[in-house]
Length: 228
Image (tube, rainbow, N blue to C red; front, side, top):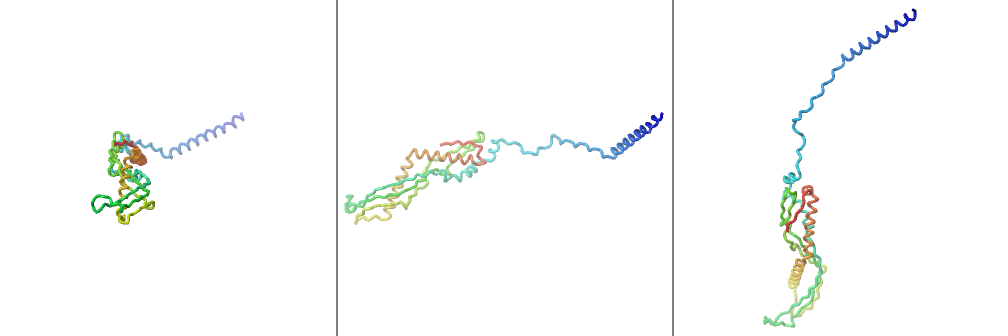
């Protein structure tokens, strides 16, 4: 009987402690702020903020022009020029006639030779190239003009001559200038008639144009087609 009386107070204390904790929890949650409601998701019909996708064909149709292509290829003007290096030996003879009779006067015969090195520059005029942009095929169509002599220089440091002049026929500077002009014209005709060299000139021109267009951001997506 005494043991039951000792246990009763402990049970009462347990009930009281549970009641206090429950009351404290109720007060805590009643004082806490209510949770915020989640924000509504943006409307599916809102205007997109990204740039619409543009195909390669549409992009180039709007941006690439023949003037821009010319600008891309402008630095290539020197590279599409091919140079023909040569050495030339030209013999000559000059004789006067007898007082306009058409009969040679052997006492007026002057003769000799000229030896020199030269460079013939062959290529095309960049201003004569025609371009067409075919956006449907993503293709640049290039029409090349015919090659021509762009420059011809004689290295005067290599110029040598040996002349035996008659006392009655002195050759002046004008004579030698005309002689060299004739030599240059003859060499140019040989160069332009050299089919193998001219083929190399044209292939070099095409390769340089392809390389420049492929390396530039504006034209790198394009293929290149040539019309001769």
